[in-house]
Length: 203
Image (cartoon, rainbow, N blue to C red; front, side, top):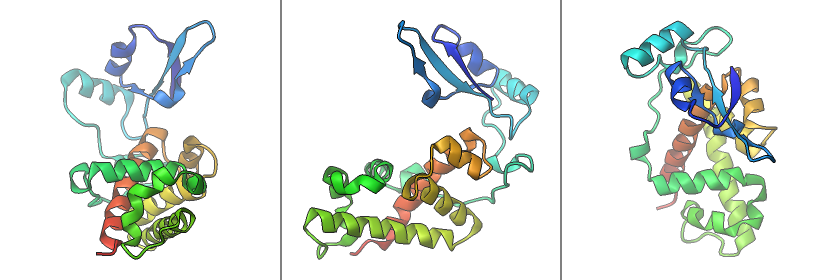
């Protein structure tokens, strides 16, 4: 469930009844009114259970693999946590992925990833960009040929960044995932990609 409300003091109330902030839905208007986006994910937890958990302070919601049949179950995964991959690399990689099809015009985003091609890599900007893109493509392809969790990550990365077919919401729909669940997968997929790129990088 997606919704927008005028920016007032409703934030605490919406969070209390289970809504999560959805900044991608924010919509400022010409008259100065700002509508803030919220999403209510009922794919993995009924509303009454969500509200009770929040009221009792019972911690995290159920794992993302407990949703109904419309949302594909996800196997437990040993995905890399934020502490296992340098956050600077994750940020640099995420920026490069967002501009993947236009990296040739953004050498500033390619330079932090030069380590992927090693000391003997191309020095010319265009050739370096092509090599970095190729390294990323190979790792994504390798993920798609791996375990179920790796295949899901590879598929998300390919659809969201390498092929970029529409919005993230459209990609979530293609993958039969709710939008919040999709964004959680996306964040973990980028971390996994960063980890695999580090492993594959030349010494």
